[in-house]
Length: 89
Image: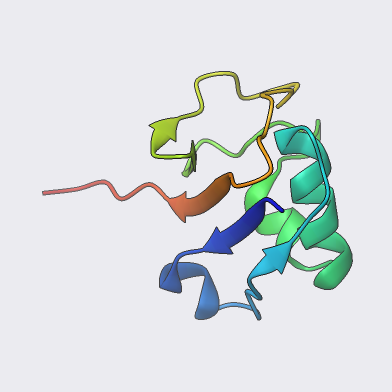
């Protein structure tokens, strides 16, 4: 079953439970995580439902390039990592 994990940066603002999902797409898996903690939606998605500019998602170690529909397919053993992109130097 795919899992969704959030990096510790988001834990400063809200609970970030590890979520097991039966979803077949990235969007559906994220929706399962948002059901577990509705506050996460605002940290991950913008008002149009796209990934926020400061959020990066990796599926099975590969960066998700499509940021609006989030229809990337998931496999039963997929791992989704959601993290805030860091900037500065």
